[in-house]
Length: 387
Image (cartoon, rainbow, N blue to C red):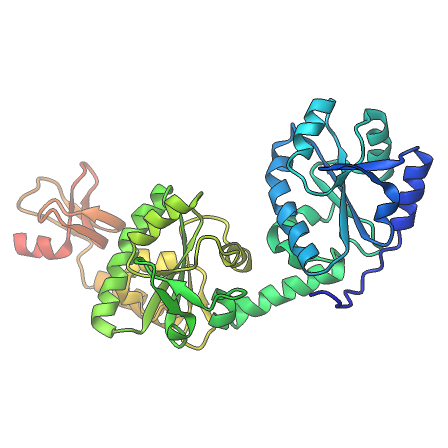
């Protein structure tokens, strides 16, 4: 990435030098001691406004550390300067321990003047000193959380480019690009085998966003596993699922992965985060379905599998219309109400997502004969047998 022209004009570096000079700031702090302000000359300067008492600040700092180290490895002559919102020097020192960049020495009044000068009204705030920078109000913090070092040079133009890249990946998914990462062209199985991504190209793919700690995920995983195994048995190797974990740590991820019969993106890989952003995943469980041609079929695969199981394959709109039409036809052939010799009340035809039949004790869904008076449900087939 070094040497590329990012078309960002960093015009305000000299101004910050003048501001420091006017404020009598002769040196900045590093983890090793004092650093002359002049050492920032010629560098890409960004200001980081944060505080130790602020939980979002502490949560964001690791993202910024990763960005800082990555850009410096790429040869970007970047420097970040921490300006504290802390109320006392102990808090300032404790927060600065987690940083590898520079800091303005602790001085509440000086920090307040710098905060006012750059119109910072929230923390954490990250302010690149360039002419076309994404502003605090435009949420550069969110941009960095989403894109990491790729957000550099932190301009509006770069942000638009990144969003356009996401849209392209979403609309025309190249699986090797979508699921791979720098130096990794494989997925992992439950027994930790490396499976080349090229082996799943041409199949219908389900990207399964879930976490071990989530009860709704655990419940849906049972349904998804049943559909997956039925499809494998009936149709062979035409369908694959890839776990995109939102687990809190590697231990949870491994428990989750090892309990599933499909593949997964490695836990330590940033691709997990990128896929959540690309497909705008706001809650879990979520299942995004991609067709053999690489185009997204549906972002609501969870509904399809929950409703129709393996019968929903290949998960196209036309297939769902077929199933819905068959379901309507089945309902039209059933009486609107009926009597069962085992039950004293009249039963009415009803539609239910899931129920347990009081005759055969097996689970059912869709059409049922239900009692309005008491909690009694029958499969239509069980009613016919009873009569």
